Structure formats: C-alpha cells, structure tokens
Length: 119
Length: 109
Image 1 (tube, rainbow over the protein chains, first blue to last red):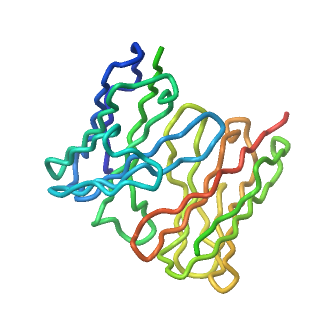
Image 2: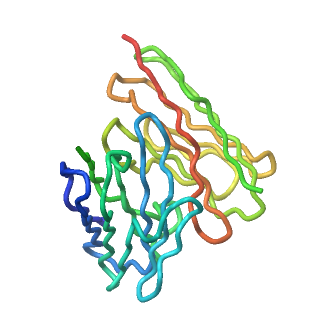
C-alpha cells in the first residue's frame, strides 16, 4: 500500500535553531501534502496545505515566515521551522493526498510524525 | 459554517462493545472518516463512509447518516490494545479533511 516517509522522527535542539522535516510519498505522486501540528492531548491542527510547484496555503494564525514549506517535486515536501523556540515544541505530522485512492480507502496517507523538542 | 463534534473521553470494559458518536455540519461533504491514534503516533485509517448505512470491518463498524449529519464507530469485543484516541473527520467540498478533537477511549480490565 501507499507509504509516506517522514524524517526525522525526533529532534532535540537548542532555541534559535532551524529544523527541516521531510515528507516523501514512496509509491505514489502527491500533488498535495498537508502539514499538521499536534500538542499533547489535543487534536490535529492543520498548519498548511502544500501544493507541488506553487506556494503553500497557510491556515489562519500560522506564520508563513516561520514555517517555510517547499513542495519541489511530486514526492517531496519539506517543512522548515526557522529560529525555533520552546513554544514550537510539538508533534508535527505530514500527510499526502492520494488522488488515485479508490472508494472505501483512505484519502490521505500519514507519515509517522516528528517530535520536535526545543530546549 | 463547518463544525464537527465528538465526546472527549469514554470508558469501557474489556470484551464489551462501545459506540463513539460524531456529529458534523457542513455544506459540502465528500465522506466521513474514522482514524485511530495511539499516544505519540500518527493516526491510522479505520474506515470511510460516503453513503448512508453501516460498513463493517472485523471488530470495527462505522455508520453514517448524511441527512442527520451523524456517524458512529462501533467497537466490539474490546481489547486492551484498543485504548487510543479515535478521530472522526469529514472531507469537505475542497477535499480537505476537517477533524474532530478526538475521543480518548479507556479500556478497563
């Protein structure tokens, strides 16, 4: 089945560091990828929608200059958290939309997530 | 507008049956999804309903009523490993998933 690979799975770094997270669709082309953030005991919050070859669409309240998204190919989207601070510590999850998903199957395939801890 | 609602937490006994309800409001609808999420892990797909009725998959079943904006996830023969959060989400007219806050299911022996 379709697989999405997300790396790294865990990052611990100092405040002020920039962190890049990669999301790859391994066996299908993903024109659209989604980036979510999830704080402890809360639901998934959509941060932005990443479209191949165009600018990402950010949700209200998400700083586009802080969370840089690049969707350079049909199989890769990256999220860079620039100048990260402790309040950016969270679980970041990407998903890729599978346009060829048949009825009854899942429309989005999730990566395993990245746990970001800023000291 | 759009909204989706599900209970915050439920408790059930091992071996029993539990039903998790989800209600939603939206003008554009392309299906209702249920996902399971264990703590610290990404969600995993459980079911998808786009037509009214019951879809059964082993111990898990999902029901949809589009006219009522209502769905439920039914879990039978509960096992301890079923302790997790269960997220319902609907796909809107832009094919974007709108997520509920999740229902934390606690299974007791």
